[in-house]
Length: 316
Image 1 (cartoon, rainbow, N blue to C red):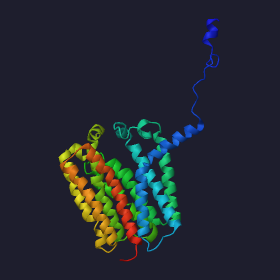
Image 2 (tube, helix red, strand yellow):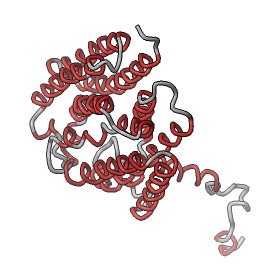
Image 3 (tube, one colour):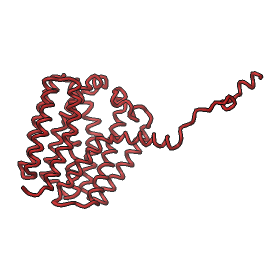
Image 4 (cartoon, rainbow, N blue to C red):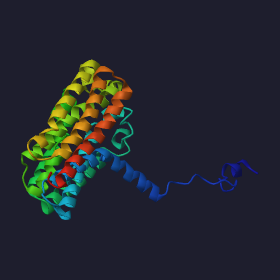
């Protein structure tokens, strides 16, 4: 056989099969997964959960499926849009951290232009849904939350102050007020108490993670509290905010918004939260910090679930 013929043999001539190109379905699934990840789905689900609780608490009965589904969907869409913008603006920072390096914006698998278009599509659909199917107040409050998180927190606060999570936490605490506004068309004191609880919950929740990931945050260049003020100071702040949170969770009962069932549940949940806060403060380890971080998510979900159960229990 001539050299020419050998050089031009393909894999089929040798009885071998060429590597199969990824199917169109697999390519689409991979692309959808990348865009889905940009919406930070776990955080978005917690956001929507808190908003739905706000909607249900705003009604003496059941507010109706239309307003419940429409408001939850609109808030989900706008929250996802805000998180996508956050991923875009923090792409360089995310690329330096193991926890976030695989995000599509950090790896470059989704371009900035596509991320912007994706965010605009989600945000526009969410705003339109809230305006046409819910009410204008909910739309404007949700848009304000979008701007607060995606731009004020991400661009101004996070890279410039170690108190970023405290100041910017207000935007992340708004979901119950959004859900309440969707049903009641107003945001009364009871809704703001729910916002206060999430506001007080955010620092011990996030700083526990920041302590465990302090080396990554140091490489990222972000002025997170464990990097700028040290671990001991951050642990002390986690403990102090845990105490403030425990006090804040009693307010719904104090104003007559909830009854004994919620109060009993809050006492039990706060006992565990305070224990973790104390351990982070006095007996720190990365394992304790990550367990504290994980528990804080469960804690918030159970606390709001207790509020909901108490709301629908017969009067004691």
